[in-house]
Length: 307
Image (cartoon, rainbow, N blue to C red; front, top):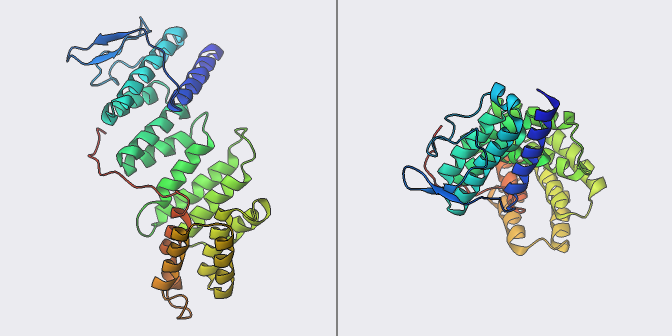
């Protein structure tokens, strides 16, 4: 890939991320498709979106984009602008079609896969969201939010994780360690991800490690306290769990969240029956620890979208 094309893709990827943050897109007006649908006019005169019902048709080839980087950049902006229009119309099946075309046009960049993951997630398509996020974290320009969303998707999966899921969670954490993308100090957010994964996998050793990091970096943070409480429950330390419950209360954790923590312990008979219920607390503790801060998602009941 030429340096000019690489720079163009980098700038366009930044633009994609910026537009995803609800910044307005430029437009030269509107035009009507054959089906009578109004869409923004295109900037690119060379690479046309041939079919808005199937924008993946006619995506420029790698050779085309190398020969015409400026027009290719306009084409990417055209896809993005039309996707934004459909977001405003709440037509997410069409949004996904444009983002799929973006991903096909710049498959080596994380930005389009990230948008695709986010949109699949909004529609309740967990399987495709997970797959798109996996692609995002393996590509250029990956951001921490992509790792976080991917871990959330994996840990939100109902029931016990199978061996493949556990392997994937460990792999994404290792992938995060190897990511050299410069960002602000991510010690606490990364520890949150590790604790989230540890609770889901009932990995006491990993939970001990991540809570130790949080105890140093953010000792009074409510999330730190809840993860520490999760560890105490997982390890069967009633006294420590009680102390941490009181600490959470003094830290200002809301009554609803405190009630949820109490309910977890009571329903598992953990407070009154030594040793009972400990083995099955992984999922329950996850609900208590993660639902408190909005980590878990409510999945919309939506139809399956085009593959």
